[in-house]
Image (cartoon, rainbow, N blue to C red; front, side, top):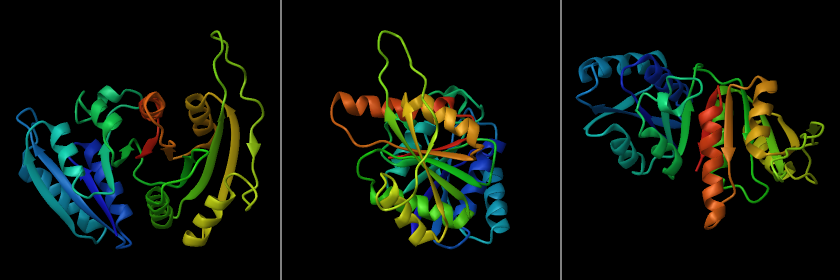
Length: 264
């Protein structure tokens, strides 16, 4: 059972995030907690937010637990999300700027440093096509479980993307080279993961392999593939490598015009 924490503030952006959370729980394999924060700067009263939350839950025939808290929104959400939740769902106002999150400017720290997986919802409430950028190393079983839950519930098409990094030398960036469609079989880099997902979900998985600057490749692939959700996994690293991994997730979330799932 996947535990989802949906941060809602009553705005249409927060409602969009809550609706997607409820869709993910509609098969009864996940439960949703809606968190509202009593913020003096928020014009929408908590009572109205609670009414909206219950109404959306009824649309999907599920029960949503409602929690109220007081304090700085990003700090409260961080503390609550660490209490055993598998996924934090938040809405974003803008298409490009992380500064436009309904949570405010401090949301940047929330997205960059929170160890819980985060789904940043933009524009759409449904997910039909997913692009998952996976690292070249081992995949966390929790990430696979979460992705399978999303695919199964949304009946979405999944494409796995692996990027062979190409360094920037003296300010020069080479072309990515031709797009490659890798066969999803046991002998390929993505084969074992794709076969595992297909076995669990019963949905066929596509595989892609590209070379280039990871952030630019992900953005380019997302643009040409008409995806609704882009998921990013980064192989755990140490010291300086860990800082670069965190920056990749942040840059992708900041610049991606569609919903983003940061797998932490």
